[in-house]
Amino acid sequence: MTISVFHHSMRISCALLLLASGGSAYADSSTHTGQGTFYDYSGGGNCSLPVPTTTLTAAMNASDYANSAACGGLIQITNKDSGLSVTVRVDDQCPECAPGNVDLDQDAFAQIANLDTGIIPISWHYVANDQVGNLKLYVEGSSSQWWMAVQVRDHLYPIAKLEARTAGSGNAYTTIVRESHNYFVAPSGLGIGPYDFRITDFWGQTIDVPGIPLMPGVELDTGTQFDVYDESAATSSGAGATDWSILLLGGLLGRNLWRRR
Image 1 (cartoon, rainbow, N blue to C red):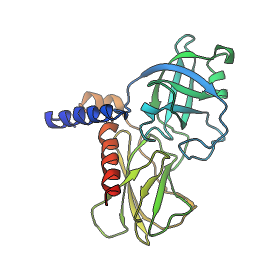
Image 2: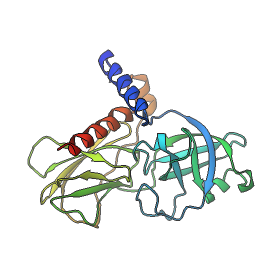
Image 3: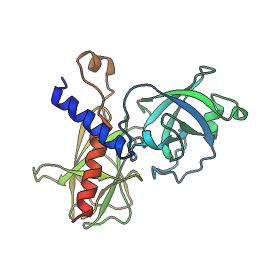
């Protein structure tokens, strides 16, 4: 995909607007640098995800957390002093952390540094989570036809957008706004269901999941997963990762419009 001057200008404008309002510009496929610290994590993180049994975790700084855009994403963190690396899932937010910083769970930190060190220089980037199996959808337990919150789980790459429509209607998809607790919320609901969902990942890849019933409190296996993305091929053709600036700004505008109703 070739980015036009107009689209390039839109990206810059969105980034500037978000920076002016104190929000994150975007989370991308580049390598980030900062400081690594650790804390004792036992669940209940800002991403509202079930505590993993096989994956180490971390809390992302507020800027790169990007209103929960980082949630569920797998990042590889390298201790720049020792060269040791560890892969963790973003399960939480670290509001006091500076941009680029990551607060690792204690076990993850111990894999790349002595706990007595306390603070280490790090670099990190997103990687594919190829151990999760199929993509899952979880409808929050108190959801109904009049109010619904949906969470996307076990994704290969971070999720950028969720859209929905009445199943089989052929109508245009409606974007559902993502909240900071990692649920996509439709404040007026989506009707009685079933629904067709369209899920867009970090790279702009989309998956259509048809005929999902209204089943609050149940994790539903979609039977599908994103493709492994060939970043080198995309870079050579001029394509790039999705800018969270546009997605996050869209979410903020949508939320403000809804509040003014």
